[in-house]
Image 1 (cartoon, one colour):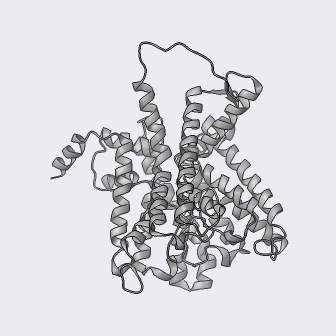
Image 2 (cartoon, helix red, strand yellow):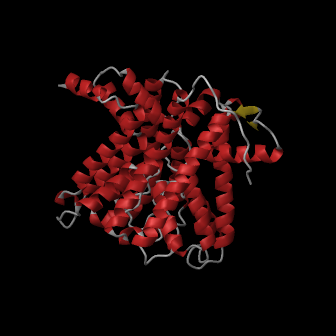
Image 3 (cartoon, one colour):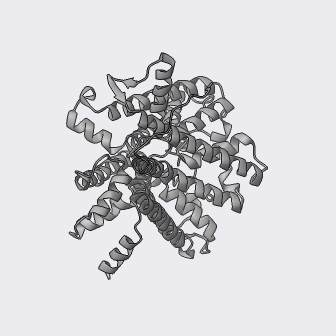
Length: 451
């Protein structure tokens, strides 16, 4: 039966990108079916397939947008299903499938390695199984350490069993950049708690850097000897964190609904936390609906950029953003080459970065336009914020999510799905097309006016 199933899959002749899309879609449908069971809801009634589908997609796509309060609506069964979906969605379903295969002693085929290469965003097939083992083991260690630190605060607050459960759930949710919470108010009850803020913040940052960066740092033990990818990821991440902290601290300092009523230390802590989480985490320690328009717009930009390739984060990715900025700088300098750290970035990568960004922008614009019609009672800023949050798989909201219409919920569900697999799949598709389109002739060149 297993051989027949494998043969049927091979007969479909699906490329790795298509397998990933279908895999995530199948996982979402399975999750939706389980969450739609009366057993998953505290009131003993089915939540309805649309809401179950929305929640499942939000968990698998590690987004965190919710149509019902996670803490108040779902039973322990429902919460465990959500947590499992978050973990599989964060690591990738092929990574989890590889874990099962390794435990059962099965051989990893070439086709499976190609899918793993696509999912982990690697350049070659060599060492993929070893990398997968590293990903799984390091994830377990990091999430366990995070849960232990959170337990020092959650157990005294909620009791031993509930506190331990909360610690594990929030540690996995933070590392996978999901943003689901069991407090009902995200991290707002702990806005002044250094341990909770730093633990959740570090888990989000580590989860958003990508496994390639960890391995590079582990092997080389010095940033100077690391690859250009690692250097660029670390530089852009640090720059965005610093920019976000300074901006939020300065703009929200006297806002009584956000930082205004906090102590000076509390303001620093909250501003720091909010500079971390917009890039796909979805937690918040201050009310997103109360931030100024300037801060909301900065968060939208951060959500669109997202985390780094090969991580649990979404968005167009930091290196994509960096490649575009470097391309602009090279044009302003009048240079034909895009250079940084004494290295030259191929023009093809700049084109791909522009393509991924352009497609992402078009998707956000299109969805925003549709939602301004279906959700006419909300401001443009709220709709744009919601759309970008879904595309970047962030999970932050200004209160629109629970009040979305049925059409709006389906649109946001599709946007979350596109944000989770879209950019990655598009880069793969562009790479294949580029190889396929290499012919024996080239058309004559002619210039057009630009700018």
